[in-house]
Image 1 (cartoon, rainbow, N blue to C red):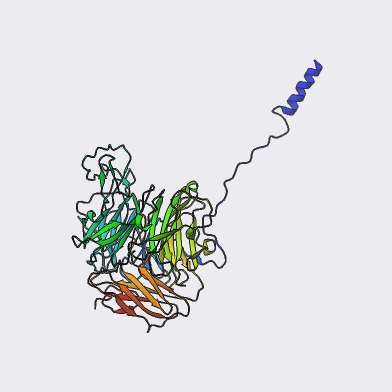
Image 2 (cartoon, rainbow, N blue to C red):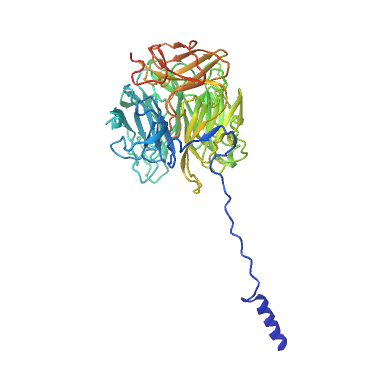
Length: 587
């Protein structure tokens, strides 16, 4: 009995509740800290100057670097998120200042904007688009507003019936172009997924699909412009609206997520590049003549040219043309979304080298050029830009990889030799996580390209959304020139022009477009060319977008400058030094 008592006492003392030994408390697992901002290094190429230029403590996902009040200074319009009201910032005294009023009579949500001068009065008008993917927001058709400036105050007046009989579509992108070179801007609407009944769209004959069935990929639309009036002439997009009664689908519909323009075959007429989701082929609409009618038509050469990868397809975010290898033919950069486990199967972000000898154009795809050194990581390249950040005449590449944090970053690829790119993102001072809507703008007017971008919290709620303004501080000794166009017979901003700059050792080409991409942002107006140290300028040739205009040659030999010079090129052949004013080229 005594032994039993001792055993119980021992057990209670050593293992009971009153034991002097404390049980180990498991350590709380801390989440790994992530640097969401740029990697700060000594002598970085770009410096964060957001607060200094008045953009601190604001958010933004889309940006529009435009001169909205026609004072020859580039202002800024910001959409805080995917469905939001535009915020206007006037550039004044070397900083951006928010307008204390709205130029619109009513407040409304917008997914994207596109600025263009449709009536050639010197003031930018604006197209407002809604992606129409939120169920709590009724489908909204495109809206068009005429811009006016009176006593320094900006006002936008809605143009009623601008899009007569054109209902709301799930429009992901809309770009201005002049497809028939008549001087009036037309409009291409890129459409994504939607319900026919929800959008109150015309039902194809024999349609029986119920509202609760999956969404349809909607066909794109083409609108002929005459000033502020637009008419649906989508039949020029051959085969785009073809409908199958048996399958109850539009056979050739994208679904389109992004649109851009380019004269790929250089016949003087603008072609159209569209980027598609869910493995559908991207389209290369070539602007050709119908020999029977003598009118213009668009034929899709995506598959035949190699622009569309026809095997497993992909999820394309954007396509953009530029002559990166200096052979005077437009190449194409294509941005894709990929999960890490499908990198070898699906289409990936790539450069498409133009290897055309005749017609039709032909492209050779290179994935290695856009390899970011991230290995088998998911990619979400939502927007891209060609730029020459160090003015060495070689095009560099800027990519918004956003949606797979923390690896999704703003990437800068420097072209160190023709066809050879190097990822310098870590040393650039730019590589923020989840960039959005990046635009190119020379804020301090030193001839070196700066940029504005947003940071969003896709798939990581710890990210604090904000806006970044990065100033280019590269210490190169190169020069640059920038050309602004003012048309007379053509559209006033020269949208759809082809520029060829000739220097003492060769040529560079640039294409002029207002905006591009998915729910597009808009870069600053003007075509910038880098000039390596020691080179001399000879001339610039402009192929104006007008049937009645010949290519104009502008001599540059007499102009002397140290770092940078702006030129205004008039369609009449006149050349002016400086940025354009409202009445430039009218005298």
